[in-house]
Amino acid sequence: MPRILIVEDNEVNRVMLGRRLEQRGYQISQAETGEACLELVVTERPDLIIMDLGLPGIDGWETTRRLKADPETQPIPVIALSAHAHSSDRERAMEAGCIEFEPKPVQLPVLLQKIEAALSNTSVAAVPVAVTQQKVESKPVAPAKVENADSICVELSVSPPVIASPGSITAVVRNTPRTPAIAPPEAKEIVPVERKHILVVEDNDPNRVMLCRRLQRQGFVTSEARDGREALELVRGPQKFDLMLLDIMMPEVDGYQVLAELKGSPDLKALPVIMISAIDEMASIVRCIEMGAEDYLPKPYDPVLLQARVNASLDKRRIRDKEMDFFRAVAAVTDAAAALEDGKFDPSTLIAVSARVDELGRLARVFQKMAENVKVREQTLRQEVERLKVEIDESRKSEQVAEITETSYFQQLQVKAADLRRRYRRGSGITAITE
Image 1: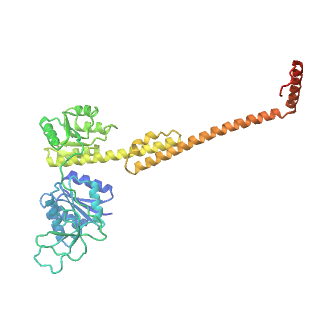
Image 2 (image 1 turned 45 degrees about the vertical axis):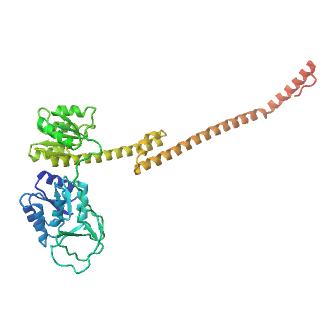
Image 3 (image 1 turned 90 degrees about the vertical axis):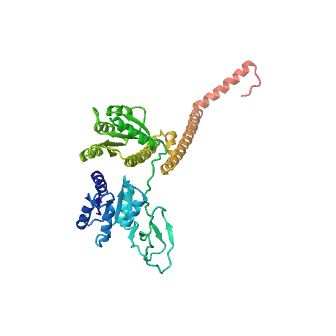
């Protein structure tokens, strides 16, 4: 089982990331500083290190450089974490010897891909090359492919030893078999496709107004609540919100009570909540996360951190909404199959699902066509059965008539009837009646 060392000075981030990785089967060790990391690496011998760059004392860049300078720790892959996604930070991380760079807040699926790639030796291997003024005698090798203009990940057509040109920092060579590199996401402003509606719950008027203004400058629509009771009234009303920023310490109904009400309601539990508080206590933050909060935001508000965490929470909400929509579509197809089996299928129940462009939509369209064919066949069979019933009834009537007319008694009656008709014609003077 791979062992991962997480080096992070923020206890909340370190604990939460460790828990999530442990749930995926990794053994986790933790260090709060660069000095502690250098000591643990000797005793723990981790398979991979996740390194926060903004460490107190010896920062992540220097810690990584020291690891790569030691022949015993140099092979351990290092993935850098940073709250800033500037290209200079990535370049410095690669220069120090990191193989990947992941901006905060961490997107766990992306980080897991980078971890798995690093542990399987298929990720991009950063090879520090000393800056030298030595002339290269051989002809330069033309790169076959540059994957990202802002990245220094270059795939070479051949793999001879590489000598850096003056001023270069790191040469990146891909191991065979070649697999696409995971380019670190670029920092970007929040530009929502549709204006998301955020509810800000804060009892301090200046803080609430300032927070709403910052969110509005980022393109969001905001609503305000001065306490927990007002917040619950708003979320239970007709207005739908995409995210709630919820202060913990409020009079009467505090943030804990509001969060408990939201997560206990089937209609409101999907609303993502970011807790905001000046409380600098691990127990309070962990309590909120365990109750179902999406994230937390410390006071005073940092604009960059606010933007990043709001953006990350809305992205998670969007993914969850897509998952729930998919599950509802699957349930509709399942119900349609049961209705078809019971003979109560209504094709209109699959109109929304069949409009999807994914494989589930194709399945729904095929199911609709099959159901329509079955319905036509059933109608044809019913008509055939009705026709057979008529033919059977006519046949039975013919048989009943034959049973009567073929008896001797019926034949005697016919003879007597003919005799009576002859007598009647003689007595009436009728001489030409056709029998």
